[in-house]
Length: 321
Image (cartoon, rainbow, N blue to C red; front, side):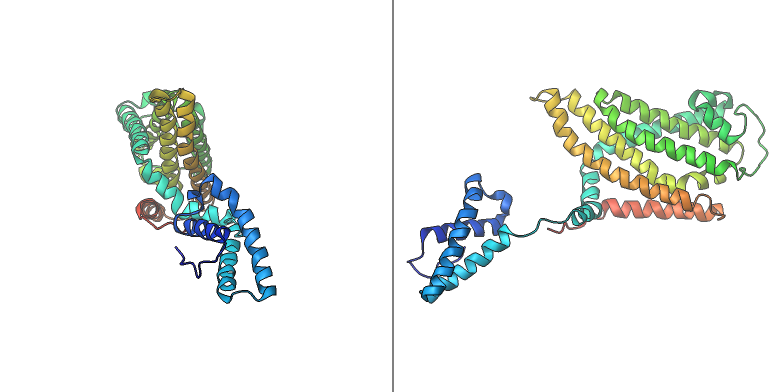
């Protein structure tokens, strides 16, 4: 705290100095309601006293103290709040990754549910292709242009006309899944689990069909370049939905609505980051998927995406105040 320059300073000046020092040391949020209400009147009094002291050529120590006091008060009262752009950049750079790390248990459970569905459907369809229709909607079978029950295993390139149709259909589905997995949390998380399982099974069934036709390289090079980010977005959305569901299942000493409101404050910001991820995935899908690039290079890009996502989410960064 500042040392007062003399003993004849007004108590109001001392009070303002103490409040400003407290705000500097611990932040404005630490100030009491009373202190916040007093800053304005005390600052205006200090400005008036400074002008009067200069006009009368008062004690130089008092004038110096008032100069410093008014300068500090102006810096606190009239400092512009951080711009929306700055806040958005801060969220992207450090806020969203920090939230993901904090909510990693729920996101991990969502990931495990999705992968369980994918593995289960892959094994079932690999053993019996006729079961693929159980897991896949009709529009997917039309997009692929082949009967699932066919036993033809002759290698054949995936038709170029099919690629953008199939890729776009899967991307649109993943966007819907991300939204549904989050919103479904209000069903005590049950619908979130169903959405994750169902869509994991879709992916597993598709992978099994293309693998049976010796087209796994073509399939994964079509899906993974943008799908890595989309799948991560689904896992985070599912985690957000499970956070809501968990609050409804175990509200503690609160009402379920109060617990849900608190859980929403944790989950909704995650969806802000998910929206950004889906935009990025859409850009990759639009430019890279239709590009005449060899499948191995597209898969290499997908691997690079995995590494960059891991670095983004788990390399801790300091938050700029």
